[in-house]
Length: 85
Image 1 (cartoon, rainbow, N blue to C red):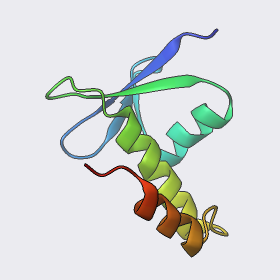
Image 2: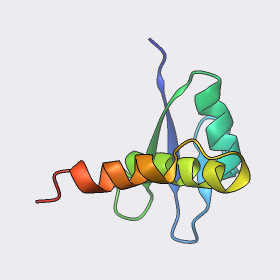
Image 3: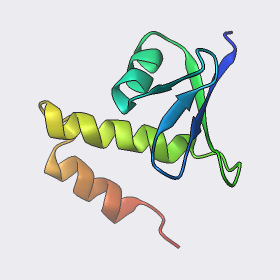
């Protein structure tokens, strides 16, 4: 199992890769994941783990750029049958 790659997200929405000590884009973060690296995204100000939200952002960006991964019916199903309570 690989080490977790820590990425910090700053209030200006910039992502900072702590391994290469450089700012990266959302596409760069996606590439790390595609390459098989485990990433964890931490809010630089609050220290909260915001990995889940960042992964969702990557999916949404992909949905806008390419043929959608999810159909409207898929998304409606997720909304209808998710336990929102």
